Image (tube, rainbow, N blue to C red; front, side):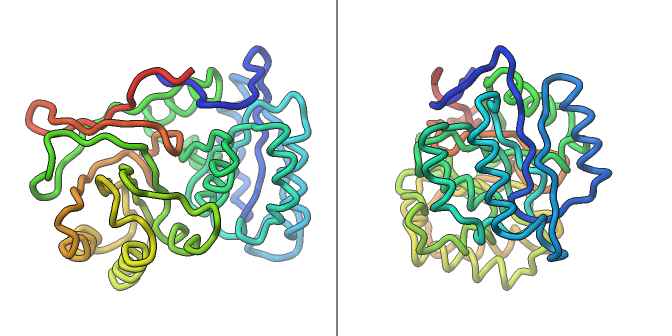
Length: 298
């Protein structure tokens, strides 16, 4: 069982802050997730507002929502309502000093990938995991793991993996990184883009045609340290026709990179939370392989 890697926590009476750092969201889906979570713990909502149809408020408003969460001594966790688009427009210089004083963990995925790596670069726990609009639609294990994390701070990864081709080693160890392929590509050049050397790197995406998957993955491999990862681990690619063939063809130029598929992350009903940078191991298990977190990090 893994605990929070670092940070300030008041798990005796936690308050989960629900924020909209990016896009607006269908309120019925937010409400379904809110009812589920608020039946177990206290949830404070920083509601959306504003005039731009695809954003949950102007940049100042969405930045202030995060600052408010970081300033609240009762806040123990920040959860994004939805991804979409908009995180890259936030005033991160304004958020940084508050985050330094109050290192409150954040969870989300998709567009929130950008914010997760900003959090992680400040040494604050960042969890790739469900957003509120997804919570009520998750399968049983994903929902259970998410609620356990939000309530107790405990989490783990222990899942079967399917190798794509022949693995190049008997076992693989490294920090677990990853996120949304489209967003990761837009992060190239930012100072908090992670060093992926030796990592186990998870990718997922939604509604992207084959040529875009090819272009984005090729760009990452040629301009970042992704080609120095220990393994590429594929999650769900919802609505991405032919994604396995495309990614397999691109990675064919990097025979030293071991590839696995079947990781429980993405825009569907399966999305297990994990902390960016957490040490993990990939080892043979019965007729396949297994990805597990290593040790206890209280």
